[in-house]
Length: 102
Image (tube, rainbow, N blue to C red; front, side, top):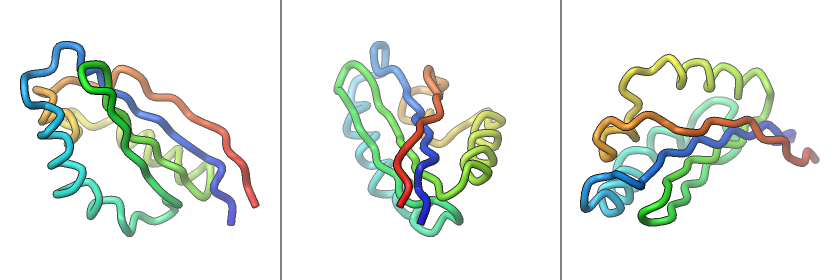
């Protein structure tokens, strides 16, 4: 399996409302895990957070095409679900990543 086509999406928490860390945890457990569990071409997704600094989703795709399709659809969203707990804040950093294939 090839899983070397990553994408990192990060949101700033610097000016996020009080309670955003708990809201993001609820979003991950209550919405995001199910939303991405059976996503075609997605090898895995992980979420990371530095309270008061940033929240990040890292996606690893089986092909560059799967990553590119997701990245284009994500960029076209006016209301990405993660933005809701952040008061509608847009992603501040989206970058492709290279990984190892086996």
